Length: 584
Image (cartoon, rainbow, N blue to C red; front, side):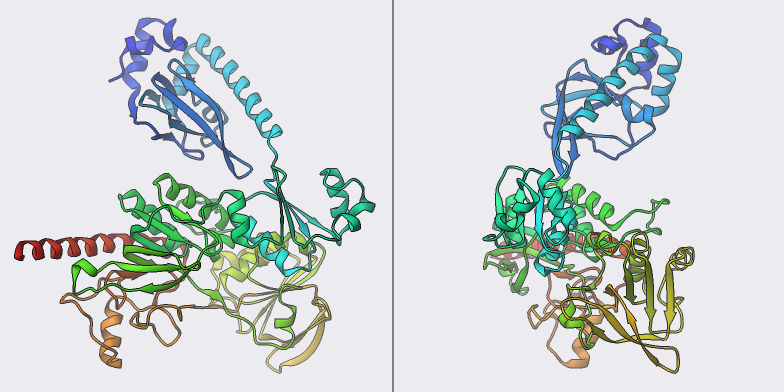
């Protein structure tokens, strides 16, 4: 319990009258922290704090990297900056050692500074100093963690731009085909002069990545780049309680709940946490965010949350095979997960949350021009590249609508080509309403692309429009394709039952298909749990699951539910092991 005498340890409160200090003590929460425990995280609702005992580290993510701003010692106070700016917490605070903190809620803090001029003046002075220091740190910190040099038309450059952006790594992009890009290299002091560009990069294999520490990576793979940037690509252990395949909303939801509940948790993601949802420019209907948020913001916060609970998140890695355990023999029930480099990991449970992949467009010219004006999905990195361009999108779902909204901020015109009669059956009404406000967005129904034309990059489209399917040629600088997705599950073991489209069956669907196909038998006396596949201990969540609702919120919910079933499954295994020991 916080007392008036304890608050005397804080110089800020030492000089105020005893009755006022006692009043403050009566309203203060007594927060005790262990070493490495977080007091508050950046972005959370702020409070006012006074450090009674111990030491605290103040950390902030700047330019994609966590940096220590300062260390608070006993007697320090903090938290006034976000409270007075009416903003979320501007930094995270973690205990370096066992610590004790007095916490005042926002209302009590504002009551404090409004009734005591001396405290008000002191706190405002401290706030001004801290804001100034924070501004200086931001100014002195290089905002780009890397400089990527290449050519806009190079597919390898596109892949690296997407990889960096989706992993929330700030980078500078310099296009050697753009005079402005070359001039920026001179300003970056990478080139001595614009005339030196041809000589400087004559023997360099592009794309070239230059890191802040001076290291140069020629034509790196995403994994090479991830390793160089310090992203985790190698598991720390050989055995896990649960391995999650895929880092979209379902996978991140499972990672947060699994790690927070004490399971040794590993998530393996081949590109970046967030999945396809991470590329959404704006999600307006996610519960708890009335102002909306981008998919990148959502996935970034979820990633930070999972790491807070000590989940391991591998990026630029893939699971290529699963060797199921023997559910009949509890001692041999563990599964083996094989990574893309042959690494074999043992895990008690697996959650398949690997989502779906964009369906490709089987249209003349499209395959040849993919990456050269034709793109699947719409990464934020490409929005700026279409400034002043004539852009076409194929698709009528929410992903297409969100992309059209984002691209319309840069493009001269955006034309959505929808095969059906309207958007109502496939797109949320709020998004339809938003598109209607964009003067440079046109929606054409009963429309289909018949061919893509261009030599080195997209130049025009052959389009059939209207019920009569009138064919016409239209000049186009970019085409973004959103024609649905499919499940890539051929790599799974054959005894994991899938539907005719490759989606993983779970729960009651497993039993129905076993009877229908006579494909085998479920090995246990109990039925599969709701999100359990035809192999005990292997679960599925999110878009890759048969019958799932293709929404971010439902995927997050399924990821958390899967962890609940993992706990039930592990309890079953432990009970069986105990029974075997007793019988033996």
